[in-house]
Length: 382
Image (cartoon, rainbow, N blue to C red):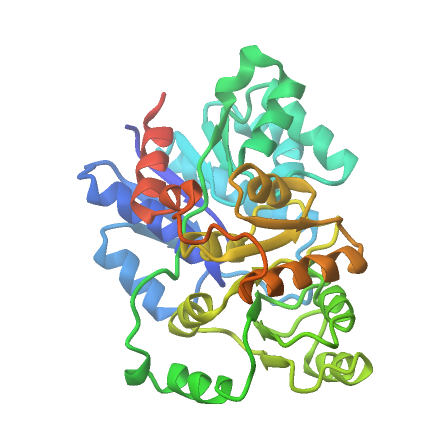
C-alpha cells in the first residue's frame, strides 16, 4: 500500500471515533507506510492519541467563523491540502467526509491529476447541482472509488453509473461505537441517570442524538400525544440544536406529556450513551423525509437487538425492513408513527409478536473489527 493521507476537518461527535478506528486499524495491521491525518483539532487527547499510534498529524488552524463554512472557504482549504499532499509525496488521499468536498473537488479539477482519491459518502446528495457534480467526478474517475453505508445507496449510485462501474462503490457498514460493558454504579453520571429513571414507566423509547430539525423530535412528541391511555416513557438524549430545552418543555406541556418524557439535553458521554442504549426497550428515529444518511442510533440499537422504529424512506427504512429490525412508519406522518409506537407498547406488554430473542443478522456486521478490516481491504486496492 502507498502512503495515504486522510482528510476531515471535523472531529466532533462520532466523526473522530469513525476516523480513528480506520487509521488505528491500519497501523495495527503493521503497515510501514506513512499514514497522515490532515485536520483541525485543539483536543489534546486526539493529538496525543494520534502521536502514540504513529499517525502523522497535519493540524491546521482555521480562521474563526460563524455557522456553516462557505463553499469558497472549503475550496481554499482543500487546495492547500492537495498542495501539502503533492509536496510531501502522498499520492493516495481518502476523504473521510466527502459530502462536504464534492463541489470544491469539481472546482479544483485540474489539481486532482496525479492523485488517487477515494472518499466516504455519508449522505446521498439531495441537491440536484451537488448530485450532478458528484457523478461528474465519478464518471471522470477523479474520484476513483467511494464507500457508502448501505446497499440502497450503493444500488442507487450503480444504477446511475452502470453495472460495469459497480467496483467504484463499496458498502461498509457503520459500526457500533458505544457497545461495551459499563460499571454503572461506579460512574457518577450513569448512576444519577439510573436513579432519576426509576420514577418513569416502561417501555422506554429512546430518541438519541442532537435535536436537529431533520431528526424530527417535534414529530415524535406530537405522535406520542395520541397515546394518552398508554404507559411509556420517551427518553430524549442529545445536544440542543434547532430545538432546545425550552422547546421540549413547551411541547411536553402542549401535548400533555408530563411524566412521560425524560430529557437529558447535553453532550452525552460514551458511558451514558451505552447506558441509554442498553436500558431502553426501543430506539425511535422520527426522521423527516429530508434525512438521507444512515443512522448512528439505529446502529447502536441494532447492535443490542433493540426494536427499531423508523421512517420507511431512504437507507434507514431499507435497513429496518431488509434486516427485519422493527417497525417503519410513513415518513412525516405522525398518525402512523403513533400507531407504530402503540404496536411497540403492545409487544412490550406481551400482546403482539416480537422476535427480539433472536440476535438479528445485522448486529453481527457492526463490530469495529469488521469495519476496520473492510476499510483496510478497500484502501489496499490499487
